[in-house]
Image (cartoon, rainbow, N blue to C red; front, side, top):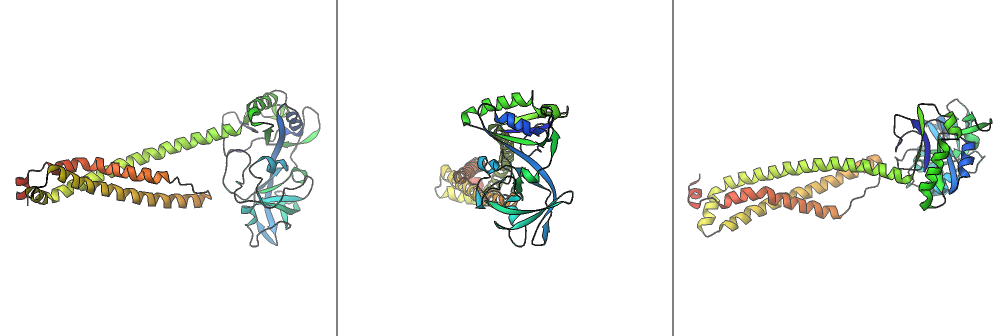
Length: 358
């Protein structure tokens, strides 16, 4: 679960900033002592002006200061090379996006120079590279694969506040991640953390009146994401329905024109013994073929569009194969529905009038 602060008139959700730096080391100790808590992982942002490697500088606005437990407890733990940093040392971990920013890719053992926003430079050794399937984001919902640099809070993180509880000058963080001992205790632990933070914590005393503390579990993050996905799915479904209606009208118009142009042909077919059902079947088959061709073209266009979008957003492409069958069936049904009236209209054509048609 994640504890953060945000203005009272906003909702904390995926992709939002972490808020005020109000969670002191005293708060971390008190939360760690709560029943059911396995570990507390602090996370803070260090403002940077850039990162240099082999005389090449890259602009990077910030790095994440945290503890080794960040990689042990989150989905960030997939290292393609090396391992986590040690607290108190000038060591950093990069994701593959950050490691590949330079002309010469950074590897474990290389030294980079981190320049703080105030101009101070720190030489740090790269001890780990995160795998490409790591998200580059903190705990909670997946985010984009942005270049990320991670370092230990000591010596990189210097945001400090006076703890109201102890009177000592302590590091203060904008976000804490609390890991429960057992998955079944997550809700109970979340309640205990919320109760502490909203009553006797340093965060409550340090927080501006316009802000509030938010504690969210991964389940709540998933529910928020699912709600967004459902809304987006409903929007796309509405567009798809409108497209199907337009497509059905288009097929119906084409079939009506076809019936009109082939009126004399219909008369000849009836004159040589074709029944109404034969004429009906003929035009329905043509209509179904149009719907089938349309569905196949739609599948190809959809796959290409999805591939392009996922490549642009650097996300994996997931395409359920069963939807190909569903798309084909829908195309056939649209063809049947759209072609039913034109086929029926052609089947009931009077053969004598049809033979006279010019």
